[in-house]
Length: 310
View 1 (tube, rainbow, N blue to C red):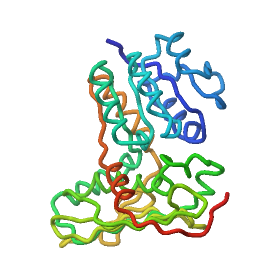
View 2: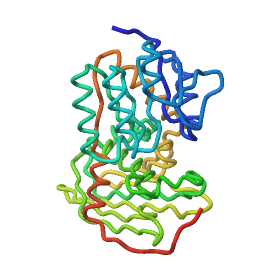
View 3: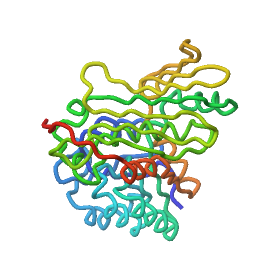
View 4: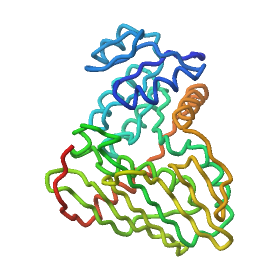
């Protein structure tokens, strides 16, 4: 049985890896960044490979991998790492399809490895407090507004417009991960309008309506065309007060009064959780946010809008 610090390899070295994973690993005493695997990127001072198979063969001392490539390619890398008995962290969304992630979950169980399907927005500082406040209350209305500028956050990333790339659901699934964490009861999707640029294979905007067995009105509006200030808000009305999560979960207000706010620490939380899973020999594979996205593509009414170009 291995003990911390765990040697970890970062597979897929792009913007999110440099901005979030590298500093979070460096700030966590349970991990040591020991190698990277990428065809195009690297981290200064860290041993670099271009092929996962080669890295796994040459570095048996590496106990874990964090997979940060686009979701369309993630299954093959995760399956290979698990077969080599390495613990695996999956960036969100955990895969291109639900079935492939279920298969990875079975493979992790067979090999005795930890598999962690991450949802970084659940680790935003105010999400636990929002969940606790709502736990004893009856929700009457919940509205998600998640609008940002794709050119700012995904510059030139063509993969995100291809099938499996999710389009606006790439950020939208962050909101759904918070929704499925804080809402005190079950929800299922009732309808969806999906706006597809006429030259793209994934939506640029989406409007969702959920069914709540308790009768609450639950909606979500996602849009990738918002310039200027970005909006990541969840507003909740209950019989005994109002709650608002802003800045993607970094700020919480109750009845209009800010009660908590802090800087982004989401990825630090992910790596704390991953270390805990490895230590205890467990996996964490909650697919509820991804189920809502899959249902949106199943139920969604397709609306064709103007072409999109970077």
